[in-house]
Length: 123
Image 1 (cartoon, one colour):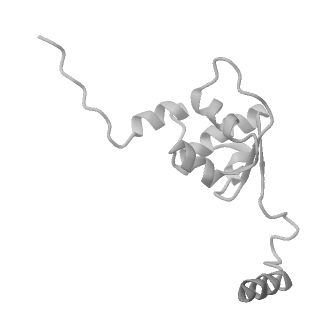
Image 2 (cartoon, helix red, strand yellow; image 1 turned 30 degrees about the vertical axis):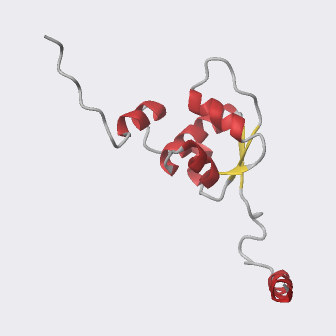
Image 3 (cartoon, helix red, strand yellow; image 1 turned 135 degrees about the vertical axis):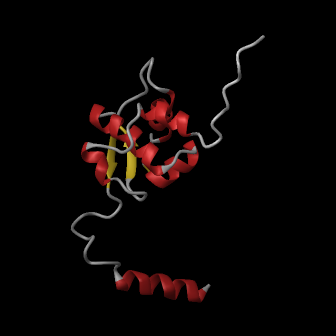
């Protein structure tokens, strides 16, 4: 008689638990990540590195937003943020705000938006 089969986890929660080592959220500088944060690799994947970390480094050779990265890897934001936290602490990736901090409070450049609108109307 064979051992009883363990039911599989259709939600993927067990996989996420293993990927993050049981952590539920990022720590350190990664706690400020949002979906628009751009991530760029600063190192090549190392032998023996966790597969998801390798994949992040491969995909982020050019800057990629956290949202795009999550879509490519099929990972929820909080899981990806934990993985990015590991890479940020190791210095393997750099995270950049998409809007420079000095311009963040000003809002969009109205003159530029009017030019874009004008150009679209001419089409």
